[in-house]
Image 1 (cartoon, helix red, strand yellow):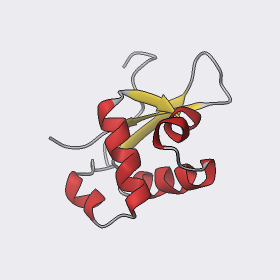
Image 2: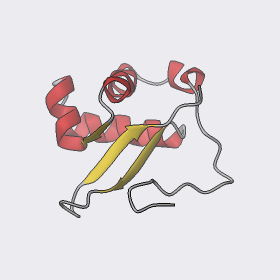
Image 3: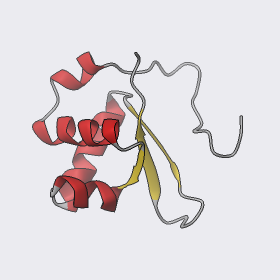
Length: 89
């Protein structure tokens, strides 16, 4: 595993679009934005979706609960996390 690859425990199953279907609209919007933009910070997601930062945090938490996103620390700024979509094909 290289330093740029996200850490994944083998026991954690990947989510699917079916898992996203029952989530709130904000989580669906964030998932679609991450689908089109490979990796983004929380601020970039908020800017792209025009959602408040608090709503983006909520959406990211709901997506994380469904195991459809990966998050890792940014190497350029360790205070930030980078999010990417991780859905089974």
